Length: 225
Image 1 (cartoon, one colour):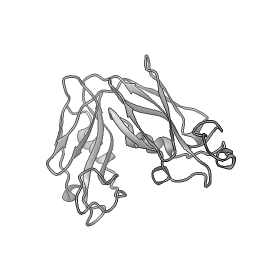
Image 2: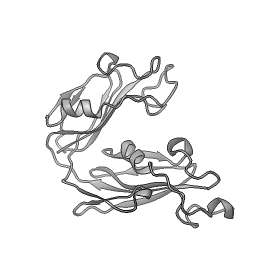
Image 3: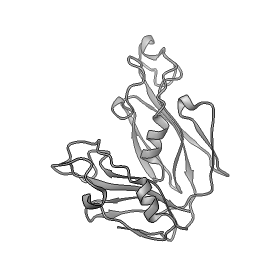
Image 4: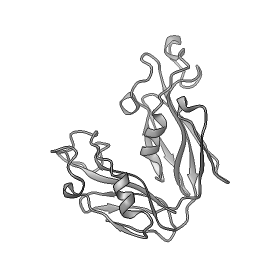
């Protein structure tokens, strides 16, 4: 499965589905990321010239689609919980919205792994995705993201996993779990970073078998620097 830059230099997510290959290619602007004191909320600020952040709030049990018509998604803030009494409060009891210090510290890393480098990303606000940080509290997912412009260059791998993270990609009788992880970010960075193209295959013989009997796929998020 080759990773190659397109004429537009768009960022991309590449998956090898046992012969079916999809992908786009992208480029990163130089970033200066600054971690701030609000780490409990999973807040990350980025100094990105000319880029404005979009903010959405998704009530518990619902989902939303993050989109970038131009460039690719970069998550800058995320929290699954509750920090006020007004958001997603219609029809809810006082007890279910009174906890305004409901924070899920892993929200940012989860959202970044799921959406960074993509042009679109469907995000569900559920306990099954983020786990429940505050039992009995009606929560919402607050997300800020930016659409980063791109230009052509060489491959830079951001994330890679051989296994399965959902029940819909590469469907089949052996899709019995969505929790199948064999992180391959480091190995694919060593293999592909700095190149114009990189041939990949999704195979147990290359990455070993992280979950026997489960149908797997290789997922790679990459861009061009």
